[in-house]
Length: 310
Image (cartoon, rainbow, N blue to C red; front, side, top):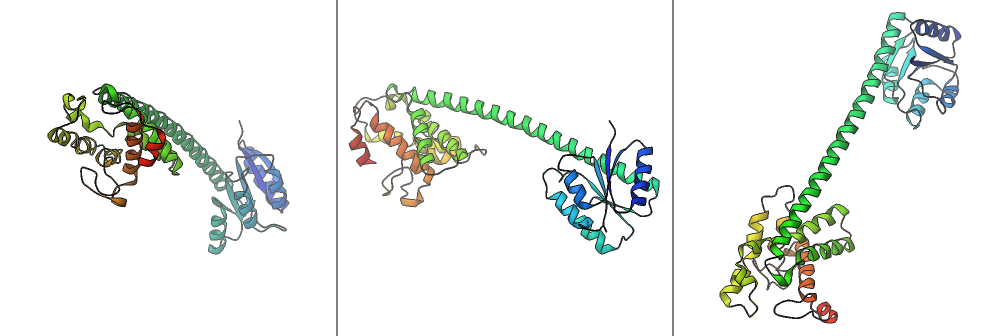
């Protein structure tokens, strides 16, 4: 397929000279006589390159280039400036407006051909590069999505293993994750942060791996020593999760979801805004599920009571 060049000049001799040089070497050439004519032409046509005179009657070359670059239909068409006046100011103005190269008048055929060919080749390379970047980006996005799905499946499996330690809390981590995500959404968190809150909810109790099953499943009141074992699980969870550098906030939900706004919680006894907001959301979701589910030490509590407690 022939490369298509549009030559724009209000001097007929220059138009014919450029057309002769390019057409002899296999280019399809369209001749236009003004910037206005070119701007109308590119609304319906996309040539491979535009050769544009700077000093024309009506809209000059500088303004024509600016308008070409400002239009979606023509902003990517390369422009070579044709001029007999290559002073520094004109070159800076033309390059700033969006020109890619210059060809002096009168034309030297070999120079004109070389600059046209090089500019078109460069644009093709840029197009190929953009397409390759798009393909690589899409491949990486698919791989990232696959890894995220795999990570979620692993986390869900781990959360299910933790919940299985206690017949009364089966499904607890998944419910806390869902509640935390909904609270985050109502609080105006971004979709990405809502996903992170979901993951934090799934793993908030991961430290219970370090608590003996006999303590977790004890149906009667815990002894002081047993309660101290239970109170260790946020710290254990933090130690397990703190080295996951891709999601550092996971450890926050694990460590501080049993802190209380008045400072009476554990393990660190922090209060108020010292408690990270994410941990406060997990704490609310955790407490809500604990009170709205049947446990070994209580039946499902009324919603009015739960709301008053929260």
